[in-house]
Image 1 (cartoon, rainbow, N blue to C red):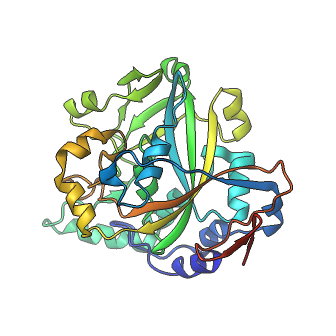
Image 2: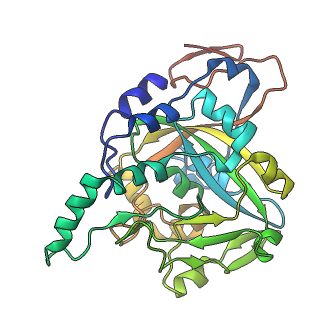
Length: 335
């Protein structure tokens, strides 16, 4: 995948408000590679059943559903994706950083918003009374995470190919940490009139316990006008070791993704099937976006393979940087 990423990161991002080229110094960090670390990583393919017959025709629905069901007693589960999971970035995530691994997106946004040329152009626009504000992507104080696997998968539209790969992090946070205010979760607007505006942020207190684990109480939030999409964690340490000391358990999944055709007959039939959507709301909520043009967008990506990634404890060698068509013999993938 490295060659593909080298190509896609030379294009414009395609973001709504920060459609810009990737700064060279950030591109270098995102594509950092060290193939000598391959022998320290172990991959195991995970297969999930489809939740129902009607969804079995849409490849990847079983992975979205299966990952969403992997909860832990007395914990709230959150998700985050690491883009451009080179062997180095994958190893760095599961060995040192965990859910705190950086995607450098905040840095990319700030490099634009603190640029003198950009700010000069923005002020000229704001001088026009027909444009009283120009929307900006938020730079939040904390770590962006999601309560839905699907939302975490969709977040980085930028620099993606129609076939790509992400590293999904699943974090089980003991509810006591939230209850005792050691860690806080805040709902934030993804786009606002200033990138540092936090006036509409809302600290989440609405949780329900179901089947032994905690969930966000979406109904209560909707009654307050909040359709939760992105949220962020505050006071979370920066290393995997510190996370473990707090009792936060994390699992890591390398996921191959493909771009879906949103006009596909099966996708459209699902959109029209309210009963089926409600039955599977636990993982399909927000799949078709929302009415806010600068909020949650319709899903564009679906998974088609899922491998759990751990530090290696066996002799089998695996390689992460492969395409779906690569040849695999006896656990070794040849490039």
